[in-house]
Length: 175
Image 1 (tube, rainbow, N blue to C red):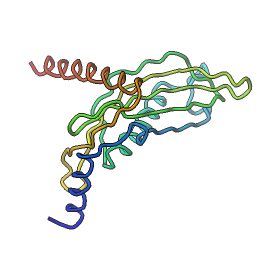
Image 2 (cartoon, rainbow, N blue to C red):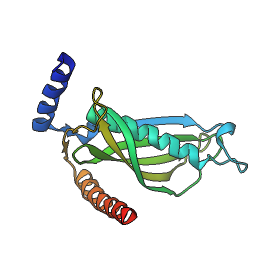
Image 3 (cartoon, helix red, strand yellow):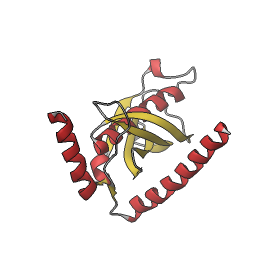
């Protein structure tokens, strides 16, 4: 075993004992909506929102796992309100639940009107990632998640339900 692989194995042993707090994965990003990102009505393109959701979710997943992460599934994305040209779009993400080699990240997207200060929640999404070992390029275990608040525990329970539905759907597709 090479030195880097030994160091990774030692870190994994420490994680199995300690786990990581939800707050350790919290990630945020923001940008101003420019004309090139909007449709003919001056609204932020849904595909651009999905791109930003994937980026901020990957940041949260990587922070938790300290690993390369690949997107495995977007279980749900709900566009509630449009984001207008010239507004700020803000994204917040955190790990909801850890499985063995995968984890679910919840993302909330908000808009802010720069002139009025009005904020709206615009989008919600749940993205599943798989941790990839940097040497073998195969899935690898991720550290457990330490839950502290009632909200974290609620999100943890709901993530298990979404995973059950996702796996059942995959089984139906194969059969």
